[in-house]
Image 1 (cartoon, rainbow, N blue to C red):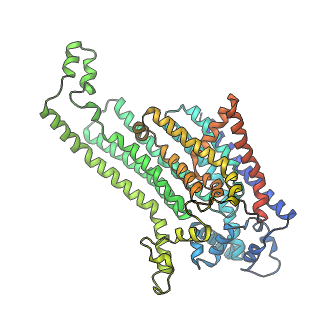
Image 2: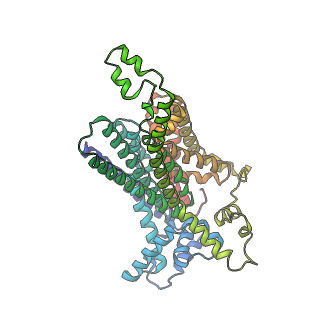
Length: 509
């Protein structure tokens, strides 16, 4: 089984590498054959060094230095200068600058070319790690939901294959944040779910086997296991925090963190099912094999004094653990959002604190947010601002991805309603990831440039899980097959067409 699991990971890694190779070759070929509509990024790339004989350093990067990638390169070389640049978070430019600085010192490569190459290395390597991380996460979360390990691996493998050839493939190879953010998000989600699985496994083992040894030894083992789970969960939290330094929507990972925290808080109430007078718990179990008299006595209502003592005991036992549990969760949430808050605070210090008479208008708001200001002023982000007749092609472009996202959310609601919403929330942490998917779909449809959803959805793992499930439903034929074929055609079309449009400066998403 381990060999089979390893082979799946190897196949996924090979598919990811093949996908990157195809995307890079298509970009270079299309850039060579088709003249660019805009050459301003070429000037930016060469501005850091004008020596002759260095053109071979620029040609691998030039086709992929378009749109946001040009901004990231400028930030890596020059830093933040104007408020528009705060739409792009600093993690990727910092990595590009560090790699460019190393290449400049070791090989005397110009900083601009080195930073551009560094951005492409980060994106393409990050994509491979993201593919493997998606497989590991989907397998983990399906096993947490009770799926058979073989079925979980099969569905996870399909999900990772769909992610390996995405519609936004060209953005995964260009110096964009997509690949890096996906890698951080998927691996952070995996470690989060892994901590939950280990916690449930420890609880189940404690309930099934008889505890032996001194009480002090059992308590030490319990604390050691709890500390290990917390350590694993903190790894996921730190990866989420790094993700929020890469892209602003990284703070949405608070939803999965809350879902996992909520699910892991359920075992902290171990005596709820053994309340006095309910006929459950240890007395009820003993009564099953000792005749009707014992069963009758086990179901007799407890006295008010007994109930009060039970509630006091339950309160005293569970409350401290719950307080610690949720206090740690609060610290983890603060950790996730802290890079986002620091970036906004830094922008406020640059534009609002120095010259209070001539500072921008957004500084006077009750909650000054340079990112929200830039999105609204420069990209027209706002409720229904994008609902224009000329934007109909963009809505059609995003329609396949939006339909898959809403289909996944609907299946979640339908499945959760059948089992009971409260039970679904407390027992299944995957609703947190579906919440992120649904929120991004609704927000992008109503408030943002809708075509961007084809890129935003790349960091939503349950989107690709749903794609894999749709491919399985295709075998039924009928409308399921037609719908899946349309979605698959969309992904395949833009996997190959995307490099042509992007590398020749044609705006499509």
